[in-house]
Length: 208
Image: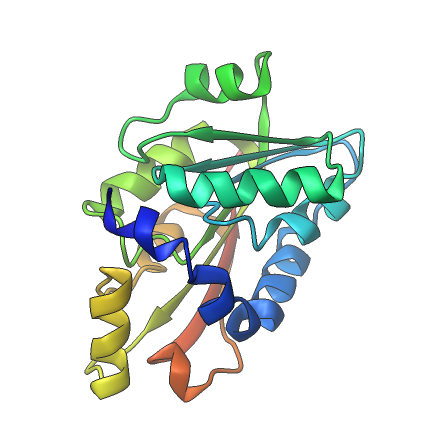
């Protein structure tokens, strides 16, 4: 069993309340429209699915991918409880995901309108390459949002976040989006000591 498979057993209980506001702000920044297709990676236990599913409506599509089977099992249970027919979940390695895998999960080829990367880039092994791969799946004119925690010099709490989440919150995870996007914007979100650092939201549009 991988660490995140084990972590999934208490992930919601430990963290869901800490990120409710940030997830709401991320969905707002995506500017979702009914009928659009959005990729949520890593989808984790599905904590962002409420906002994403509401944003694209029943005629849209949410594709949630995660590498951890334990996380996905809890995300699938959340989908079933809410009856979201527009949400499709699957397992994938961020360093290998491609358009074919998105189509397999959806059951048909997809055009990706929105990209949602929440608490992923501080944990992915090769985070810059991971983001560039995801960016390549987004259609021209598509919108991407990245939310993560940052601390230049982590306090004890920040070091604990790094340990528990297998993360590196020292990373400036907004930089690839800043380099690639048009209409780029970065915002600091309300943060608590438990976050381990400053929550940051970055948003931008893929050039046409």
